[in-house]
Length: 191
Image (cartoon, rainbow, N blue to C red):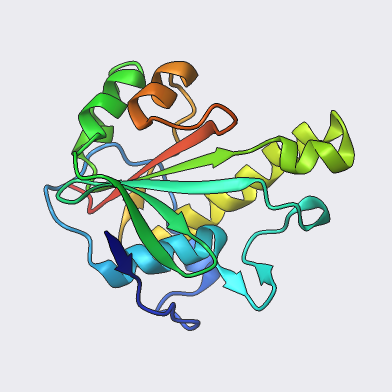
């Protein structure tokens, strides 16, 4: 199953400065669905296309990041950047298992949306050698900041999570061997 995402808006209701000022880590979410246009906007901010470029800088345009999401009522998806669609991987809600693999941070299971930012390191290291690892970590930071600021712009809250068991998260999500999870970002309406 594929979900076609609405086109992103390029003009929001809040200024960038307001979003930066309001951003904070929130770990308590309402049991409320996030609208598909907001999900689309968040994913576009994370890795959306701008012509032949993307919304996040990438060393040598190697683009090592892959974006996955969990949606409470729909399952687990891969964000296809080229087509701006969600590709269904599993119909099962994996957010509880993801929370358990993240040292029992159960607010992950509370969030309607979890953005999981992953990387395929060799996309960058084949051009830059071991230094490419550093570039991938820089890129994931750029991507995460876009996600957090876009969430605020849309009236949502988020928190960056780096505390998880890598191999356990990979098993829960059934990620391919070369795909490494780097960040989990729960997003929802604040309780």
